[in-house]
Image (cartoon, rainbow, N blue to C red):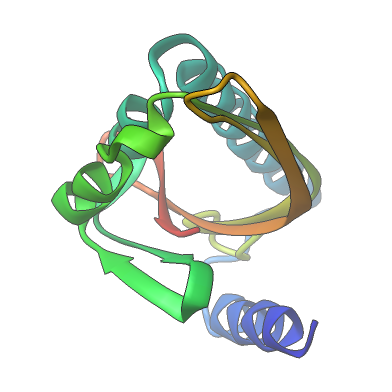
Length: 149
């Protein structure tokens, strides 16, 4: 929990330093864009697999933190990480409970609940649940890509 609060606080500090403040209706619209990106990300993972989804929605310099505090850097590194056989028989789903955006509308963060399902070679399904925290950055083409997950 302390690490989560540290990351959330750090994200908040970054957001507070951004300029060009959006109006509240504009901010609400950007939050909906981010919610749609989260949903599209979740849907792509469900339809095409974890490797494809995490690759497609990663910014070029994205970073993911996984078990044992390991950091996987870059879009290709993330693709390589999720290409392992264990992820071929895995499913993950999530939905944000909270979304906030920077005052200038170029950064956002989300958090909520996720559920992983992994099926082993004997067909046994293991389920793990937890809380995710994702930082999103608006790209030059207007799309949203995650930079931290």
